[in-house]
Image (cartoon, rainbow over all chains, first blue to last red; front, side, top):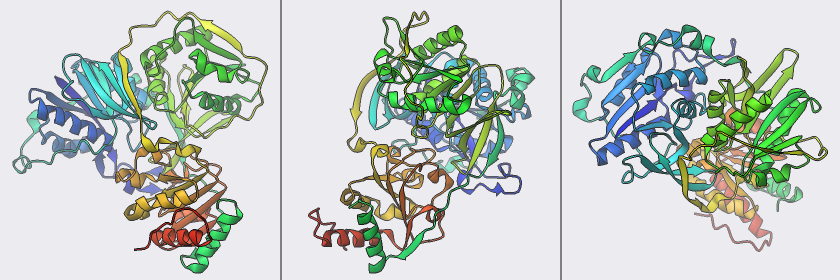
Length: 264
Length: 323
């Protein structure tokens, strides 16, 4: 069984700086982290490998070269191989183009399963997994909580899915794209001490457009089907608030308010 | 006249009905023709609000058979040449919309919360970067305008029209299903927070006493909701998350406990009558949209308010929050 995990490195969304004059995010200098849902997907793949040691786990990512140290940290955890797609031509690609680039790469190394996260914290479109599934003509499911490792063999997978208040169990034909959501069940293993300094270059491959041979007009901003026209901070309608303390008087005020408005 | 296709999911006709408002906002209520596509049963509730309702002849697709739904919509697109396609951003919708956009080689904007339409063109608005800012997006290329639309944000305003035209479409591209639902289990507290008139929501400041929100929710006949911080800490489930990556809610009363009120959170609050913010920092952003700000500790607030409610001879259960 070969599993390829798609990993997105995202700017640290919590601490990202915003340039108020230009109305843009300063993402170039922000710290990169692994998207949490994607980390769960990789942790799940490593769990499969732990139970079935013949499993091959690879990671595939597209991003700037400055992601390499983070990428190598992932390779230090029992991941067999990593492919990083990085080419200045691809900068500015929207989800449509990104899916086509990743799909082109995957079509040349089809695994049995593609594991991904469901949402990314930065864009949060959830487009790429479904679009890759479409390009490769595979089934796809989002919000996976659990994959049944004992039943993961041959050409079927059984997954539990969080769907709007229900837990649904599906059986899917493989190969398929299986998109996890962040969950307690799968935790990334720590890097073993002896792995910290290990040279993992031999496990890593960097691909550019020279390898993928996409047409220039079909990638980057040029090839994108969507364009961010502008970004802006949202105006919030402010209210005249009454400020009270958490004392008897304040509680009495709240209590009366609730009573008056019919909540009690 | 613009032709718009709205996908109608099983048991979610109301969401589809609300999307007619998006058509009206984009093209004006007289210039957008609304076509609904779904299983026949789901379409029945929409008779009279859509111009046309399309279902398959002698076939019902499985709710999660996204590949076949995509096949059907592709066929419809080629038959009707829709100007735009709208899909509610549900669990299914967020799998279907991107697949379909790739199939039709068109751009897609995810989870929109507003639209701008004027002589300069159409902009679709969505929150980005965890709602830290909003983005206005244009679609390029020749394909249809495609969007997934956040649930509960738009509400149909136009009145019912005459009867809808019912169309039985002979789909040809249906193929073998590759995903099969084995079982479904409704989780206990699954009643939707979107249905509740009163919500008691907890944020990072409430992480140490989140469980105690239940008692207050019970006393006010409401439900407990959470901010993303609480969900990320795995204290509460994403199902009860309010905000851009959670749900949009419109209760009458929203009590925000220890919630600072990032834009991403406020994005999830629509048409709320009353907001009470309980926070140690009266300068927290949520306080600027609150009717009442209670400055102080939330745990103490719950205990005191429950005490006050009980003291008034209410026969409800005692809160018993003192420690």
